[in-house]
Length: 223
Image 1 (cartoon, rainbow, N blue to C red):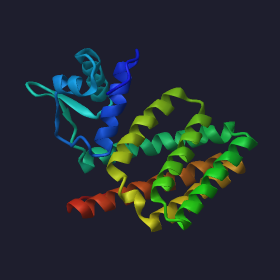
Image 2 (image 1 turned 90 degrees about the vertical axis):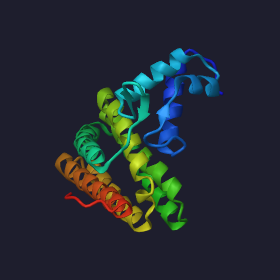
Image 3 (image 1 turned 135 degrees about the horizontal axis):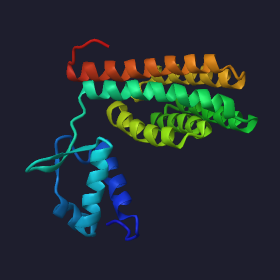
């Protein structure tokens, strides 16, 4: 059941999105308004509004005669998402390098220290949570609300498609080093280097997700 508050549609939106990301709801599944209304214990109006939001953000498609259908995320779609993410991440770190105070840089460094510990303890779940915290702090430091909103949804899509790929121990080690390179450039206030380091990090992350899913699905294509 969903707690009855004014923000029904947003709570429904987050629940359905999380269920899609974690595989509770499957790609291609039809989302029935009446069934969701009964399961969540609320009226169909916020369900319908939530499905419209999910359609807007690329999680479902509204099809004639079928209604809301969970999008099938093929590699072509994900590659487009990854390209947009790379551009936004570079923009974010550019502004964040300008805006970061000493306390912000220390906070980012503490996240990376925790990431290093999670590698030693082999806790990939903690590593992924910390990975997101590192990037979200950079978004926050950009002070660009539009960028923050766009990257939030994009990274949910990446989490859906790359959640298994990001559990590989060797990739975690190289990710940590790439994060440290970004932070070191931010500490030096070297904007160009910070942008280059972030671009390299995004290219490596994209290649890892693509290669992992290509092998899993026997996808052949250029990257």
